[in-house]
Amino acid sequence: MALVEIRSLTKQFRKGDEIITPLNDVDLDIEQGDFVSLMGASGSGKSTLLNALAGIDPPTSGSITVRGTDITRLSRSRLADWRAANIGYIFQMHNLIPVLTAYENVELPLLLLPFSAAERHKRVLVALEAVSLLDRVNHYPRQLSGGQEQRVGIARAIVANPTIIVGDEPTGDLDAVTTEQILDLVQRLNSELGMTLLLVTHDPKVAALAPRQLRLEQGKLIEKGREVSIVGSDPHERSA
Amino acid sequence: MFRFAPYVFKSLWRHRGRTLLTVTGSAVALFVFCFVTAVQQGLERLTKDKQAERTLITFQENRFCPASSKLPEDYARTVAKLPGVKGVVPIKVFTNNCRASLDVVVFHGLPTDQLQSARDLTLLTGSWTEYAAKTDGAIVGQAVANRRRLKVGQKFTLGEVTVSVVGTCRSAVPAEDNFIFTHLDFLQRARGKNSVGTVTQLEVQLADNADADALASQIDAAFHSGPVATTTRSKGVFQRDTLADLAELIGLAHWLGYACVGLVLALVATTTVMAVQDRLKEHAVLQTLGLRPLRIFRLVLAESMLQSATGGALGIGIGMILLAWGGFSVGAEGVTIAFQPSLDMLVTGGAVSLVVGVLAGIVPGWQAARAEIVTALRQA
Ligand SMILES: Nc1ncnc2c1ncn2[C@@H]1O[C@H](COP(=O)(O)OP(=O)(O)OP(=O)(O)O)[C@@H](O)[C@H]1O
Ligand SMILES: [Mg+2]
Image 1 (cartoon, helix red, strand yellow):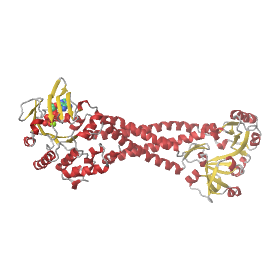
Image 2: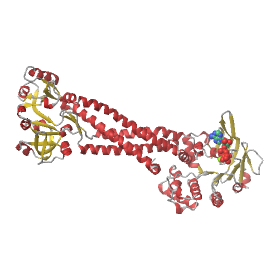
Image 3: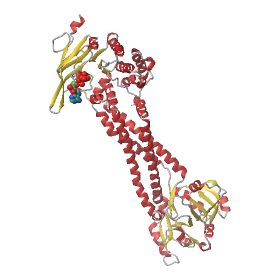
Image 4: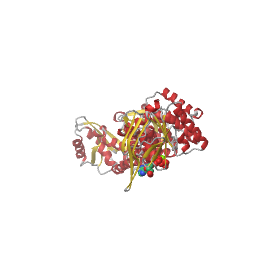
């Protein structure tokens, strides 16, 4: 059984009497430790898919099973608890809380989990060290550069050691050099820490970093190098 | 919950201008609320307390201002003989102002040997022996003493009456803190020869089993055909009748109290609605991180309650301190209402600001909690 099993996922929006179907009967498996990139034209439904997986945008139909739990069946509060424990979300615009310091921003997700103060402290420092920001612990977001803010955002996403890290164009707002740094960081999260990643991007170069590359076209997922419509990595093939 | 306290405080601090205005607004409203409550409680004390029910006041018929009521002093002896009467205190009342006023000074002249038994006074300064020894000696209630800055050894003049202050006192009845107690015969003489032998009113203390109404009619009947006819009422009714005009105004002030509550509610609710609208996206981010909708709701509620409660605490605190030190009172025709802080006021005021804080946060809190995460995240 894959870490994430998405089955017959459909999402429709109604605009007047026009119905938009950005996700039409989509299937996808993601394994533990996978690094998946997701491309597609603007408006193709990339964010919609990512948000459904992140548990913040309920689909119209279909199921999303993560470690045996179908999250489409959870109540709003249960789903919130599930996100706290399982999802690390890297936003395009970092979305740090402006009144909190870098340290406090990174600590936020841990406040929702049963960690002691000492444990929280340790984890926050580890996460900030991973993004090389130990010297900015007490800085507020407005005192940080765009790239630094995004690194704090990444530290916040990884601090609770979530099941999956999702990023919706995490480099979309950054210049070339900073993008380079962030991508390097993201890659190490996968290769060194074994974290499972799903990255939405417009940039083919960014997408190329990922071992698994997906495209959304007309509501359907296509995986590079495979023709089958059910896109799942074969565990036998992988272990071989 | 407390893990998010720094976030709540820092969010309020980020908009400290707005927060300060809201807190100040609630403080002013609760301050006014305290004063309105104090006036009402003062009036209620006058008309509803136990002592006021078991005491009758005999006044000249159809007279209201103490200056115009002139009863022969020997009426006291006649009344004292009636069954059911425990004691009679003839009192001469002299006041600077018969109309409603905020700075009423009221002299009460009581027979020297009856002052201590008829009134529950605690001396704050001075001595009773000094009082007994000085013909023009006066024991000054603490509220007047504070307001007029009177100290033992000073002379105090009001109209044609000049007294020597020999003591200041606190009374068990707050309204009496606005009185100046003197010897009866001194006050009678001070007001010109024609008031010797007359008093303003008789204070009749009832025996435990006496029927107040029956006794009141009995007293009035006894003097019906005498030189001066009387009207006898319980002290509570007497005070209420005397203050009838003021009481009506005070009844109106009651609505002012409600208006204050409404004002705080509107103010805190406005601020909270603005705070929530400013932070739709921030709340969506918090939800994405895994905060439950209920938690968002509680965070918003905490913000509105903090502002309302801080303002309330300030307003009530300042109000109560002023009431305690200011010795404020309002009076008419020799009867005064003392404004005093009370535990009741503290509890009611505190409860009002907490409840208002909760009410003000409910709708915006609910909006914040129910907002669709994805839609809110899309906002710039
Ligand atoms: N709340 C909504 N109501 C109606 N239509 C919506 C809503 N949200 C998204 N859509 C539509 O769904 C489609 C997919 O949107 P989505 O944001 O997933 O696209 P995307 O691939 O992320 O695009 P981009 O690359 O521009 O971010 C779009 O056509 C969009 O207009
Ligand atoms: Mg998108």
